[in-house]
Length: 145
Image 1 (spheres, rainbow, N blue to C red):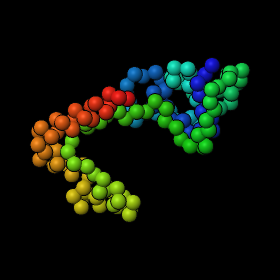
Image 2: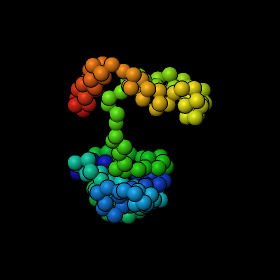
Image 3: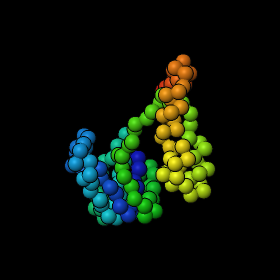
Image 4: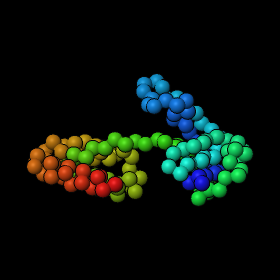
């Protein structure tokens, strides 16, 4: 049994359309966009097939899926994971959320002393033992997942 069929995808963007393990430099600008696509996810949670909906429907017409999910005409970028993180930091940018809700741009936030520079400054000014303690707490939280 297949785990999941995702249908009604207006555009499926394939970052690694030719089997590349990673994409660097100019290659990172190259993607394939499939119109009116579907995706089949296998029992291990891996993408088994991606392609035009008609082709997927034909190829998997006799398959029972645990779940069928409609992308409701949206764009899907399967396999794209921005997994970078900065677990050692001080301060937060919660105050910027209200600014964004009021329509502030990133430049507006930056001019008001916010943005990435806010937490960089707080980290540089932070006490090393406090930074290490918060880092350990964040790593412990990460390991639970």
